[in-house]
Image 1 (spheres, rainbow, N blue to C red):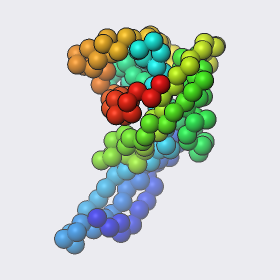
Image 2 (image 1 turned 180 degrees about the vertical axis):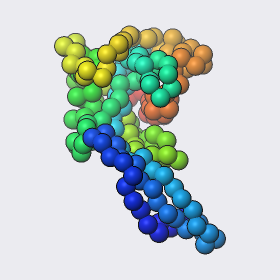
Image 3 (image 1 turned 120 degrees about the vertical axis):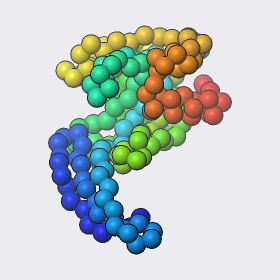
Image 4 (image 1 turned 90 degrees about the horizontal axis):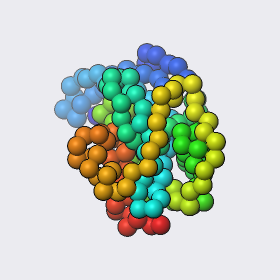
Length: 176
């Protein structure tokens, strides 16, 4: 596919929506709508053979979801380790002595340009929470690995970033 033209349809501090006219490989025209968002960070807080997860209400799906810590800065903050550490402290109050990059996942490549850097956090210590106003009702809990895997099988964990991050964790050989 080749872009022919692009126009921004909407923008706020978290995302923008653009509409691209494209040309398919056979020359026929097409239209593609893309949500552009900055690169996010996902943190796997790993301790005592299990994981710290957060649960929050996901408005677009109208239900709660257990997930690994994840987020992004408003605007154009720097992705990477600084963002991962900030999200970990904000959502769980945890601090990591070690933060190892495991890879990157595309969040929903048919809809958005957003990608997410995945980090393994170990050597955890507790500190104060610093949740944003929008994170009201967020819960946190530690799950043994077997409990986490059962949650995945039973549909209690259905977030694509969390599932992709867990795959990267498994492929990493659990570098802890």
